[in-house]
Length: 167
Image (cartoon, rainbow, N blue to C red):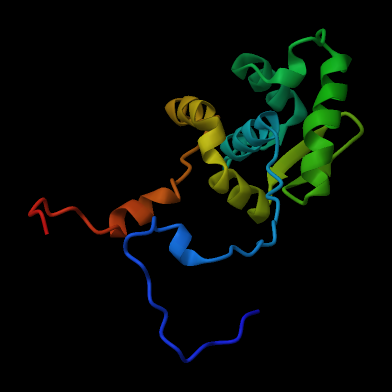
């Protein structure tokens, strides 16, 4: 960290702006670990299919995943192979990050729900699956209840509007 200086700095306006700044200091890098597109889309499906009268099953995620074109289901045959792909590529990674909760009613019946952190992650990375979100919002009905708010809407609402007066 640099000590504050009491002397005024004279900036030569003839120099390009970048040269007047002096030396640059390296900043810490904090990686943002984004879920895969399939994982984000699965979070959206899970959240959409958990309604007041219905809970999301593995089978629902698989069926909608095939319909929506999840990459992890492209090369797998029907049946048990898709359940393995679902667990390996979607369920286990999301569960490890505490984005979802799996409720095993029996060995064959498992329900999945999104946790608050999963819904926040979905909001944060919604831009990566906008097509899936629009598809799910268009299907709202008795089996799907999905309306994901756009976190950038608040920013756009409060952003200063251009007046066009040329100020």
